[in-house]
Amino acid sequence: MKSYLYLSLIPEALIASMLPPEEFGTYLAIGTKKRTRGEAIFFEIDTDFKSDFFNLSSFKEKCVPHENGEPKKTFYLSIYRVLENVPLNALKNLYLTTDNGRVLELKEGTFKPETDGDLHLYQELAPVTPFIASELNPVDFCQFITDKKNSISVPTLAFVELQLHELAKNPDSPCIRDLPYSNIDHLKDNLKELKEKPDKITKTVIRSVHNDILFRMVKNGFFIGDHQTLKYYPFPSVDDLESKYYAWWRSAQTICFRH
Image 1 (spheres, rainbow, N blue to C red):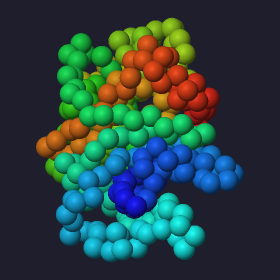
Image 2 (spheres, one colour; image 1 turned 120 degrees about the horizontal axis):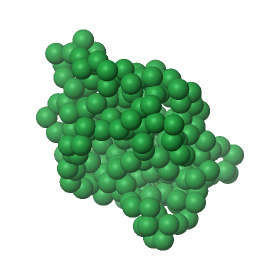
Image 3 (cartoon, rainbow, N blue to C red; image 1 turned 30 degrees about the vertical axis):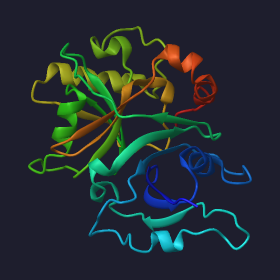
């Protein structure tokens, strides 16, 4: 049987498994007896990547079938400083799993940052998990957060941009449409401060968020990068979600936001 390597983002971990990506995602979300529920986001990783940080020499020997022939579902290689020690060129496709086990595969794409001056809302996924409002587009935001010259930075960051609708241009707008964020007035205050204070480029809206992703609020896609490189995994259009990926999309609509 083939062995796979996965980089899990929630929680951050390097995991070997004999399950292919879709089965692995379902297992992470609901287990074997469907007694647990939880979203999962993970990358498949090139099994030939080299590392001085992880002990990769034994995973193919230990990630073997059980005595009854069942595949080994998870073999954890690391749960500490995983993201920063997996080279970005080893990342393959990204998989999004809803809390009832539906899996959506995203392939890498090309990102072109907008230049319209809109404000942005980011949910950081790993290694830290705040909600951040910013005037920076995703490319500049990643470079800023991973800049070692800043007093607070991380070596590598995985994050997603979320919808702000009319608030992206006008934080005072009374039209919030379907924005589900808790304490919307606090969010608007943070956005207004970014508009009013040119020296402010980011504002923390929520310091830490539970492992919930509002898939229905994804604006463009998912990002992972360091100070030199940014990889982008575009989210499908609403038309494609409602046709090609209907079962996954219907499942994603049920997710509630908690913090």
